[in-house]
Length: 217
Image (tube, rainbow, N blue to C red; front, side, top):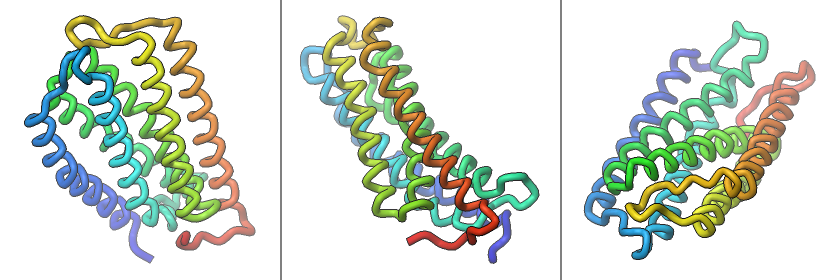
C-alpha cells in the first residue's frame, strides 16, 4: 500500500495539473470571447460558463476518487470519511481558483463574478461529496450519473433565478432575496442533504468492521 504522503502529494499534484490544463485554455478563450451585455446573451454565456466550471470540478472528483479507495489518514476516528472530506475540499478549492480566473478573464461585472464564485463553490462541494459517496456505494457509473444530475439541477436553479430576476444595467448581479429563497436556496438545501447523506452512508459502510476497503469499479 502506498504511503499517506504519497496519496496526498498525488492528489495535490493532480489537482494543480488539471487546474493548469483546463484553466489556461479556458481563460484564453474567455479573454478572446468576453461576456456580452445583458441584452446580448449574457444569461446564456453565464450559464455555459458555470456549467463548464462544474463539469471540470466533477472531472477532478472522478480522477481523484480512486486515491480515496484506501484512507489517506490512519490515526483519526473515521479515516475514510476524513480522506473523502479532504478530497472534497481539494475539488472545491480547484473550482474556486478556476472560477476566479475565468470570471475575471470573461470580464464579468464584479458583482456577477461574486455570484459566479458563490454558485460554483456551492455546487462543487456537493457534487464532489455526492460523487465520492456514490462511487463507494454503487460504482463509478452511478456516481457519474448522480454527479451530472446534481450539476444540471443546481445550474438549473441559478438559470431559473437569473431568467426571472435578470441583471443590472451594467450586467451585474441583481439581488432579490425573495426569489433566491424561492428558486435557489431550496435546491441548494436538497443538494446538500443528498450529498451529505450519501457520503455518510458510504462512510458507515466503508468503516464498518465487516466491510473491507477495496478499489471501486
